[in-house]
Length: 218
Image 1 (tube, rainbow, N blue to C red):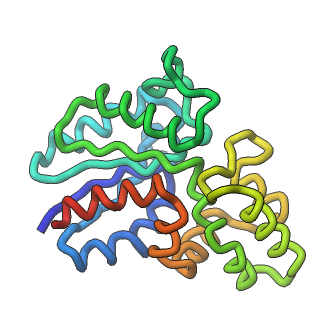
Image 2: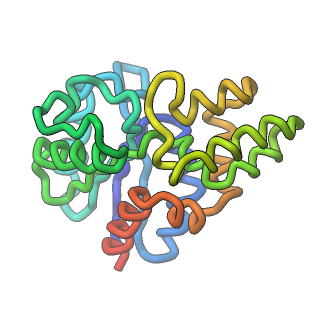
């Protein structure tokens, strides 16, 4: 049996882990506990400043040396003080995966714990939902909305290529087409309907992280 503490950005990610990832990996001997980041006393959710995140990660790594610790944060919207964001070598014109790998490397070096595995979602959780946008048909009566989401997915090489501007990030596109979309409710349900295998087949950076988790389970 292996254990992992997974520090997640918010309730959406917590539900996604609890409902989809945790049951899958528990069957393989890895028990994942999602923990929502604390932003202030009595408040949880949101990566608003790295200074609030680092102590939580360091504490998790040190409190149980036999467990692994990882993250599930969106690349989109990371604060300016996040390790590597202001570095001269940051690949500003690179792909989302290149940006994520660069920042993950800096994060790992800053936390500097052997049981830490950094992961950033490219570009955010909602990218996973573009793996099969037809799944939105269960939650909207508008075929036009579904067709528009399908067109967005087809216009990009992979869901992880849907970019990170305030107008074109995956969640912004969904919300504009489907105003009734509720991230914490619809997001995990649609991801679960799509299924883990299709998600990882379409999203290479997500899949590479899961491969590392499988090594822990093994």
